Length: 115
Length: 117
Image 1: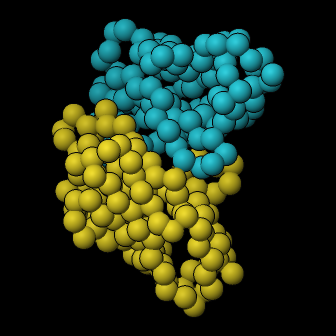
Image 2: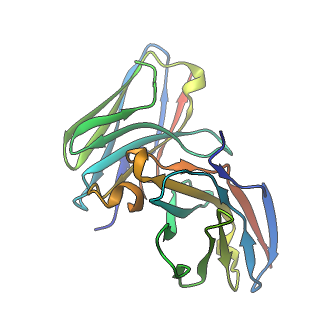
């Protein structure tokens, strides 16, 4: 069963605008963490933001924020003031307490930022 | 130092060759990982080492042999690979304490692009 679902294979956004990348997840574990990673064309995976299942506040890291809706099991990434350097592949990911250090990745969303 | 260093960056090998991929980190992380990534796909977990012991093997063929000689190093030994094994191989590390099981973020190396001819 698909545990992380990213329904947007590709997204376009105008430079300086905000964009939301969707992510839904499925777990029966009470303790889990949700992550977003960025992968530029160079190949390296870069950690962006983390949200724990017990965190009541939405996580923020600079221009990145995570819109966490626990009841809906969604963890959307919001990038504000998009920059050309934000063009990359973005992966939503999850770790579960019962998962033994496994990180499960979604299929990814390719973001294109237009000048 | 928040880097994970992987060598080599590129590797071309024949199906009868033996080669090794190397990974090193000095962040004090006690969990280390090998992932395989095909083009336009998410990374697929291959192996996890926790405190230098193999804790997860995702049913990887035996032509891939991992090794964790110490807490900073992780190797992946390759032998008799097939062309379909051509991919980007990513090493990662994370903290390994109890809380890190579900909260530990991964630090990735830049990967080894492997081509099997």
